Image 1 (cartoon, rainbow, N blue to C red):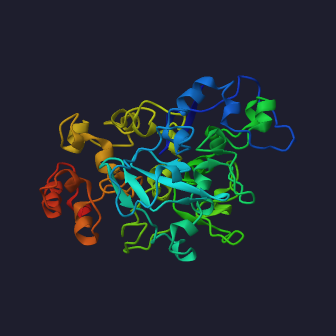
Image 2: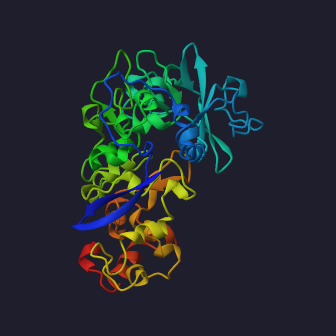
Image 3: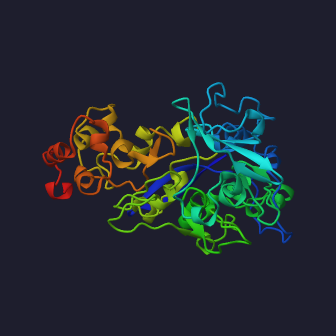
Length: 409
């Protein structure tokens, strides 16, 4: 069921429609004192059937699949393997991913390991897979079959991955990943017996997503004898910063994670970007724009991006743009790619691990062409006008009406 939350952005009351899981309309009460435990998403279906059905169609509901249960889960073509493909379909115990790339886990004993080749979905080709640049790589042998997925992957691909037993309550990003343990709520279906991210303050609400959509390191590491690459021990409602430290950029330096201006360079870093944005500082949350329960729009947006952005940012709004029309702001025809808000303010420049696959930046800053010349950061102008140079784009922007030439340098 939906609810309406009023948040204050730059001094204005804006109404943001959030698709949030609310319990049946009963008066709220304090949760019983019984210990909470995880029960799995299937326990939510009876009362929240419509939301469950939407969620079940999302990529997050099917990040990890067992090919024995889902025979069509394996997308790779084994009829034309490369030297990196040292395994067969029968070696695959779990399949990870279905959008940009697909990786394959083999079970050995009680642990899973990533096999040494991944499938590039868009280009229908095999690529080698081995991590060498992540911070944790020096702490593990240079051999995929000696790098278990439990400390390096599984915490964000499951609900309640227990570091003691090395098992999850369920695979995939289920209901309790965002709402916390649900046992008490199942027994007492009241609003006060479950965490609803829409009712948290904006920092805690965003942490629900940032726990996995970020690059960082646990504050306690190693745990046991293993180094973890996800915030082990955190659950929604707690303070993420007590468990997790985000990777930070070094001004003017490019590295594995960041461009020199601090914009994320690699995938799964929306949180690293977003916490430095003006929108984050004004109390906007991830689910002001996205609905993890599923929508018909790209990236589970509440509405198509061209519509959603303009609900807050439209001509005449104190939030800008400060022009009489969107066309005057973008200097591109209405409906054209150059007139899309995300094209300029959220360029697809963050690598997704296979050639040609990128995700949108979430700083919402406009990257100028001159930054490309100085620091080799891709800019939105020449991403579209690939036959033009950054200097050409800089000169063009300086002559746009209402644009300060000093802000183009």
